[in-house]
Length: 99
Image (cartoon, rainbow, N blue to C red; front, side):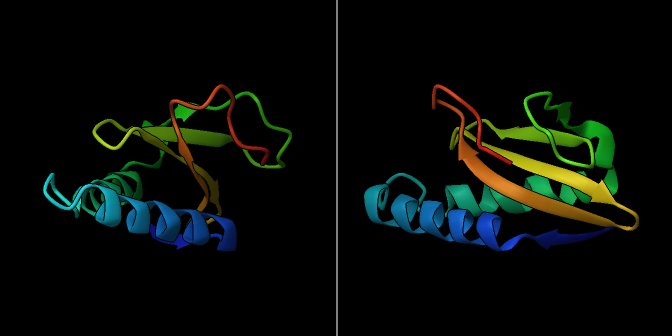
């Protein structure tokens, strides 16, 4: 399936990638991007792999996948033939994103 990052998710991914490269230069500066790319590939192959995210009032069911090393969640929904990534959100936060 085709994957599209919503404007918000793209901005969040860029911010996390920048932070990771600036703050983890000696400890795998590309880890976040590599982990995100691998997760998006898995989601494209099997859109139902994510855990359902119940804390949302969106029109489509939302799922999330954890990036275990960088500790971020990828929130996404499946719309016809497209997977829309809605948000990239830090897992250690006390709450999930407002979607």
